[in-house]
Amino acid sequence: MKIFLKILKLSLPFILGIGILWWMYRGNNWTDFFHILTDEMHWGWMLTSFIFGILAQQVRAWRWRMALSPIGEHPRRRSCEDAIFISYATSLVVPRIGEVMRCGAIKRSDGVSFSKSLGTVITERIIDSLVMLILTALALLMQIPVFIKFVHTTGLDLGSFLRGFTTTGYLVTLICLLAIVGTGFYLIRTRFSRFCDFWQNLKSGLLSLRKVKNLPLYITLSFSINLCYFLHFYLAFFCFDFTSHFGPAAAFLIFCVGSFAVLVPTPNGAGPWHFAVKTMLVLYGVAEVDAINFALVVHTVQTGLVILLGVVGALGLNLRKKINTQ
Figure 1 (cartoon, helix red, strand yellow):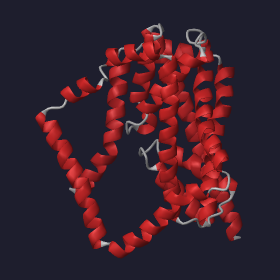
Figure 2 (spheres, one colour; figure 1 turned 30 degrees about the vertical axis):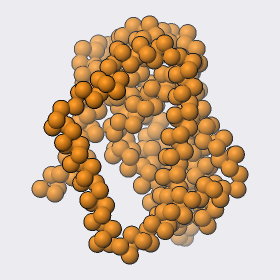
Figure 3 (cartoon, one colour; figure 1 turned 45 degrees about the vertical axis):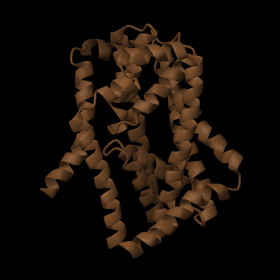
Figure 4 (cartoon, one colour; figure 1 turned 60 degrees about the horizontal axis):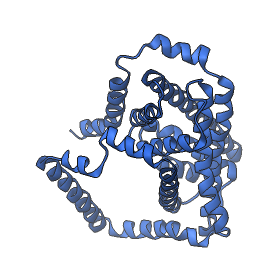
């Protein structure tokens, strides 16, 4: 039974993502898709966008290294970069597992405390969430009419969301919350001493931000990560004639909406990201067939880059480990 539950838990993100993708592309003409990919797409722009896709992950690694330094951890820059590459690639297999994987990778390669590094990762996520909220607010101010139309079209307003919940839905939500709280108390009570040690290291990681030597640089890097991801996404617009006319403001709003869609736990946001980007493009006047193909081509090609970087990261860490042990 436990094995079945584990398999089900691992399978649900894939089922959700595949289900949304099937629903979106069930009537798609795959001949048109491959024609766009091979004949109509301007690969020069896509390859240029790769520069910023790689740079985004490198900047994240540099920022991570800054956060580790105040708590007595000094991993090599390249090790941090490779760990980040691995984290993104492994999240394609199991959503959100990448954060744990990168902490494990840096521990094996440079001896960094797992719980301390995990604390800095949590700090990163808090900072990234705040940055994304700020950027989204700016995007909304620039494109309020389009976003209002998007909310009405998709039914994503709070009232519609709450009305979609049945009594059973509220009950299940409450049970899940109680289960999470109960599990937390159980782990603390049964493994108190181990939890105390873990919490101290975790807390030191969370508090590392105030000890960062150059806090303005840390904040600048945090915004730079999103700038790189935006350029990675925006340059892909110039790959296609039907999106090459988009200005930065419109593309930025689409980028923000897509970024929130990625929060749905599917491999690399597959499914929810496609739906969000397609819907936004249609609202901006792009034909639905073109919008669907844009989302599929861009996501597929950029996911391929993530896989390639993951392989590079794994090879790099293993090679340095062998050199150090010789």
